[in-house]
Length: 175
Image (cartoon, rainbow, N blue to C red):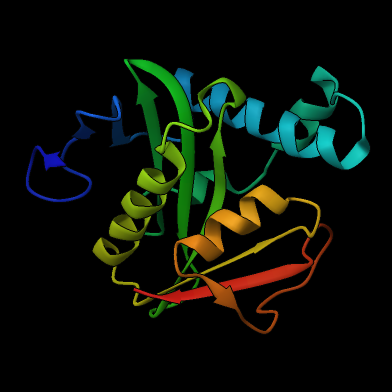
């Protein structure tokens, strides 16, 4: 993998054999917003057992805290497969030591192309650049593919660091 620029947020990284380009991007850019809508529709729809409506997606995105995913409090990353927006994720600083992994998503048509692992690695780099030494996350039990991804990349069960709806499993990893 090669990196352009002078740090994780300075430019995009590309993995030639995988066809992915990953770059920090504003959470409200056209591509980032479309990916966030797809993310919310995917996770909400799987929870409800039916597709989420446009109104439900709008409601879920309203004041969802994504504005914090900008330096110095966080970062948002968009992954592109052959130039097409295909994945996203964010990191949010919780305190001087910890960052939270959030909104990790790969569009269904792009899954199985190694993008999720590359995205996790990039988000970990972004968290380090923000000063974090540990990454934490929470997820739901039914998101088994996501949970397997995190475990495969070194995340382990930790005690709950926050509670709320849809928070059933907590993971952490030293950076």
